[in-house]
Amino acid sequence: MSDAPDLSPEAKKKRGHRNLAIALGLIGFVAIVYLVTILKISGNIGAAG
Image (cartoon, rainbow, N blue to C red; front, side, top):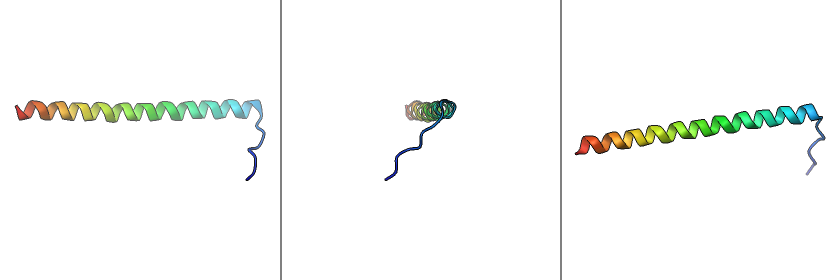
């Protein structure tokens, strides 16, 4: 197994920004799925009554 290559400070900074963008996108996606699920469930509860 090989070690990770040494990155320049600029490359490390770019990697950090890319990781942050991916994390924020993932959090946003999870939040949207959660909200849509809650809205669908609450709509079904109102229709059943």
